[in-house]
Length: 220
Length: 276
Image (cartoon, rainbow over all chains, first blue to last red; front, side):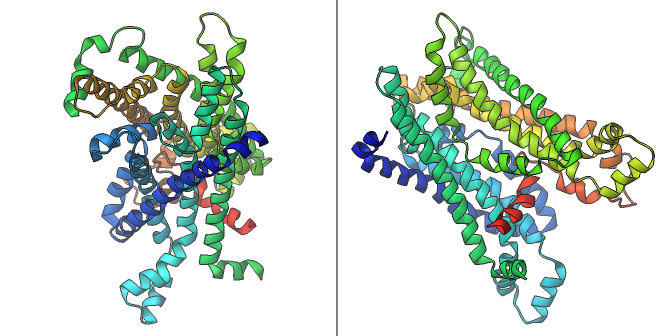
């Protein structure tokens, strides 16, 4: 396995890097789209059920279906990575809208009142008080989205996108050709798990950095 | 594009035969059902036991967190390469076993965690009341805890079914039937171009995609309906216009499922962050 790694290390790391990008970029896009939608659902009571059930409906569509239908909708090539990014962004929005709305709704009314009394205008109050307090709930959703993306991106091998799944399909091809399949397959699987763990940990670190008050309470 | 899809779907030739759409749909349902059924048999009793006794709850949290990072695709290919040489002759088993195993691994965590969380979240005062009325342990479980946990258990079942139906498509990559087959075949034959060959491919791919999505939605709808009408009325409060807000109302909102495992995420993430 080590020999294989040394021989192909540059390709392996470029696959690892593209897998990372394909896992992270959709969640960032998804969060940017989900924030205003979640805000709307939290703000206007009547809009919560339709927005959340729309999101739930989107989430029931299998990922492979979204991957293969995208070229037809966007007019891209079937092998274009844009398909995967857009499809996974839709997934991320579907997951995060509900989380953002629930996070914002979990901010106590008294806290908002106090912020208003301290002189915050609505926009300032949202960014300085409500959004930070919703971070722990939102971050929990982001962790789920990022980590499950690592697994979903590998499925994009079926439509020929280059990422760690490529190593797995190389392994399958090698085994069918009677060659040595262990190295690419195991390297692909191990790196995918490692990537999921790294991303999970990074989101946790980021959450911790964004919510210093929780740390202060935890230590006392 | 829509025209290609419609042309493929409405051509009866594409529905018949060993790898026609009808066989694909039935295969897909069979693979998904087997995986979910085995997962229910394993995960529900285990979840009930853990929730009831409180033993081994760290196991649940650990499994659920780890399962999200599960490299489904890689694991399926690995199992296939391992076991395929041990089967000879005309059998589907080398394709079925890896796929079923991976689907099982996907279906267990949401069922286990939601069953556990459902039993766990039963109001302790109510559990005490049940014991106080003279119920035995098993009676408390069947008469108080399971009815209260039922909405969450059903949302776990829905999440598991959705995941399994969606993921069963990847079996096509190693040669299993099901609705992944038309999608994969279509993809291989260069869809979305302007020639007759490609239009058939587009139609095949979109038909597979449409049928998986329709199957997922239909199953979710059926399970949602079952959940709605079999949840104890003491919990849903459907028999009265609720002008006496009972203690269950907060839970009712909480258990409104959308298949995205809402139950565990908010509960466990803070504890994970604190453990850091």
